[in-house]
Length: 85
Image (cartoon, rainbow, N blue to C red; front, side, top):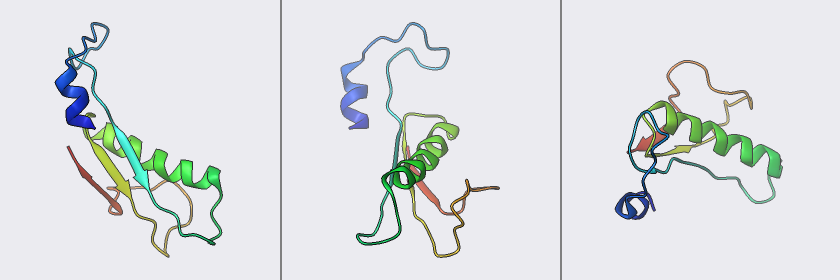
C-alpha cells in the first residue's frame, strides 16, 4: 500500500517534509474472546501509528501487546514496536 501511494506521486504542496503524499500505518492484533474492546484495539493501533510517524513517516509499525503491558502508552524506546519503512 505504501509503495502504491508513493507511485501515484500525488503532490502535497503544504508539506514541509515531503513533496508528495505518503502513508503511515499502525497495526495491532487482538485475540478473539479476550478482554479487548474496539476502543482498546484502536488505541493499540494508534500507538503503532505514532511510532511509525516518529520514525519519519511513510512507513508502518506493528504493536504487539505482551502480557506485561499495562494498557498505558509505551515509555522509553518502544521495545514492543516493530516497523519497516
